[in-house]
Image: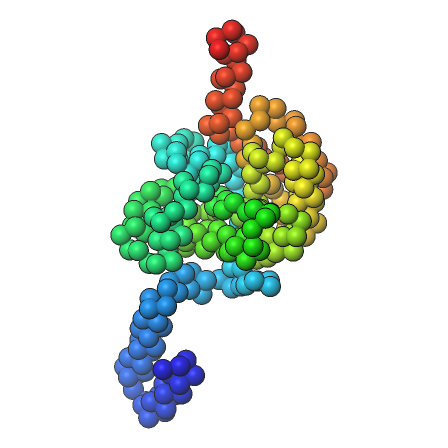
Length: 277
């Protein structure tokens, strides 16, 4: 039965009934119908998107994060032992995608409504207070639809973490090239905080220039933006702050938390300095 037919049938039956119990039964029938259809059509993510709204050309889910706290440590997804390292630790996904995006990944668990797997993820993120939306890699030489789909996946997982696990989630800025600037911010219009991962964007001049263009585009278009959280493994934060100079000159706070790779780099540098390598 099509949605329009279901609605007309509901209205005909409602007009014949003045009993509130009967009305409630009819409403539950409609809810059950849509749950049934969602499961049959692998539309389980709709339960999340129905609690927000879609934005832009590709109907990306709306997401925002208030400016509540400064992260002081970023724990990688695979580092469960560091999820609670400090009171202001944020879980992030700045790793190879295979670590979190596979047949047993979070998005797949949501998409196929794998109840047992979702329970395992809820246990994994139990008592986690903060996170950065997943960083599904975007590549310049693959079809555009795949890169946009990866944006969508990140939003769905971010919504699940927020709505199902009560995690405050910072939207993550990702792009494959300037050609994606027109879509990367859709649905983030009201966010006060965003995150950038710059681990792979600091070595080559072209990558740094693209990053600076993305920063400028983000700052110019997100009118509520107050803070940018940066994942960096460089020992010298000054180099990172130079890249984000446009944002800081506009009054945006730049926060560069510690992380395990940065700590290792510091230890390795100190070892070399002391002749222990």
